Length: 133
Image 1 (cartoon, rainbow, N blue to C red):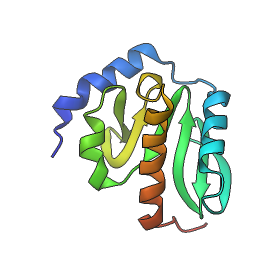
Image 2: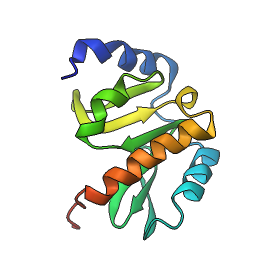
Image 3: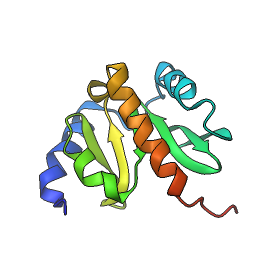
Image 4: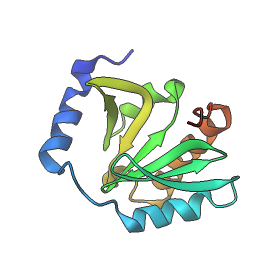
């Protein structure tokens, strides 16, 4: 199990280098659009201070600032958070297991970018869609 203390530096570093209100990276959104095309029903929704891509009515991957927020599920979370250029997603000050932010340095190459997209799409098959309001 990941201890909060071991990821605290990643969280602090993000807030020192990023502003809280930042438009999302359109080029990154275009890369995601291209990568997930053909994987089912794709819908885009503005949320998390950026753009989220829903695949088959389930949140799959988002762009927030220059980062990608990946929904990878709890099974992949522990190994993914150990990679350089990642940080956990927080909700009310607590780590949201299964969601990870990936910085530009962790997805520069096509191989690295595709790795994250594949993790998101793999989890999307088993993920539950949230109930519509």
